[in-house]
Structure formats: C-alpha cells, structure tokens
Image (cartoon, rainbow, N blue to C red; front, side):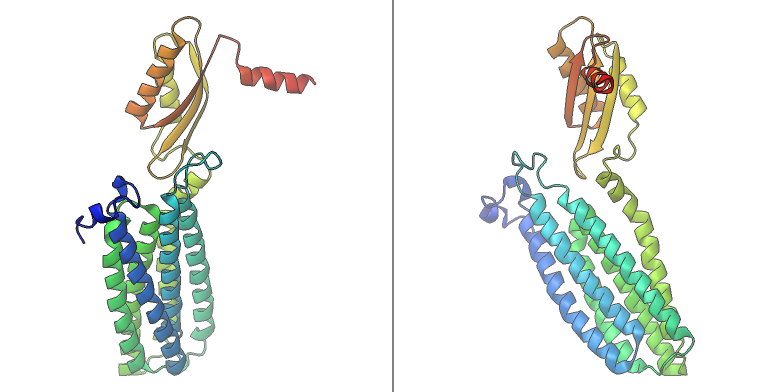
Length: 311
C-alpha cells in the first residue's frame, strides 16, 4: 500500500494526507467484511441457540459501526476551517471516539444482563456450529485489526476501533473454547459464563481509554501539562509583572491552545507577546495562543465583571 499513489491523489486532499487514501480503502474493506460476519453470526447464533455467538455477532456489528463512525470522523476532520467552524473539524474524531465508547458500554451491560438470565437455566447449544462460526469471526477480526493497526497509531478514534477489534478477537477465541467445552462435555454453562467474561473485558478497556477523550471534550488542560508551571514561566519573562486568566485546552489530539492575560508596565508590547508565544510553543507545545497585554490594575475582564456587579 506504500506511498506510490500519493501523487495521483495528492491534488484531491492536500499533500500532507497522501497516505489517507490507503487508510480509507482499508477501513472500507474492514466495514464490509464485518457486516457480512455480523449477519452470519447472528443467524448462526439463533440456529445454535447460543447467546455467546449472538453476543459476538452484535459485538461485530458494533465493530462495523465503530469503523463507519471512525471513517466518517476522519473525513470530517480533514475539512478546512471556516469562519463559522474556526478550529476546523478536528474534534469530530474526539466526539466519534466518545460516542463509540458509550455504545460499547451499552452493549457490554446488555450482554451481561442476558448472560445472568441464562446462568440459572442454560439452554442446549450446538457447539460445533458455534466453533465454526467463531473461528471464521476470529480470522476476520485479526484481518480487520491488521488493516486498521497502521492507522491506529495517530488517531484516537481509529484506536478505539482497533481496540474494538482486539476485544472482538478475544471474544471469538473465548467463544471457540466455549463451543469446544459444550461440544466435548455438554457443559452448557460455558456459554453464559463466557458472555459475562467478555463484558468485563470490554468495560475494563473502556475505563482505561475514555479518560483522555472526556478531558478533551471538557476543555481540560492537555494531559501531562501543568498550568501552574505555564503561569510561572510567563511571569518569569522580562518585562512581565504578572500573568493571570490562563486557559489551556486541546483543540484536538494534535493541537493545543491557550489564552492568557499578561500585566506589563513598560516595554515593547509586541516584543513581549512574541516572546510569550515562543515560550508557550517551545516549552509547552501550545501552537495556538491568544495573549492579552494590560497595564497594572487595568484588567479588562475584572473591570467588566465589577461593572456588571455594580449595576
């Protein structure tokens, strides 16, 4: 899939996305295969009377949807900024990843409830059919994971889809083992127990991954950044008496932004602004900074607030 197609599609969407076409093609295939698999598994699960197999099928459906979501968000994220959407569409990926995790939580909880219902009275399950279909699913999951792995390194929402697939492969392995137990020993409890185990694994994964996504949505400071250090560094700049009203947030996975007020009694305002932006970019990786310079005791925000309170 190299970069050979770069020049052919380069004019279509900027030079820095020349790998994107290959990525999109991979995702398209992954979606198609996962949808075919879902149909086979749910149908097979109904015939074999196995919740674990239906669960695996539903999980594969959520997988396909996750990829569709990831794919759509990737396309959206490439859209140029407009006066209306001044930060561009980079955050579409964060929203997609968040929706994705919420959907997975719902699926996992639903699976667990189903499984609890069947623990008391496990039905007869056709183990052979279960093993065959889960084996097919395992191959598809690993193939999909391989297709999206290359892209998962640089995008939180493709990573969510990739995790889906790994969870899926695990699910399929478990279902194959369950089918083997049922087929060899007639141990029908294997089916609901597996279903429960699958839910727990998925929920545990999400617990690890949802935090950073939630922070971005809440406009929290970028993970690992220290706002007090940023303020201290700005206060240390020559000519700067004080720094306050600092806001740090992430526009998307790759871009951080800041806005801050600097108190400057004397000196070249433009020069100080430039220096402050340099410090933010170099030491704190903030590429998008808005800096307001004000005279001592003349903070515009405070004055407006005071005026509002007086009236």
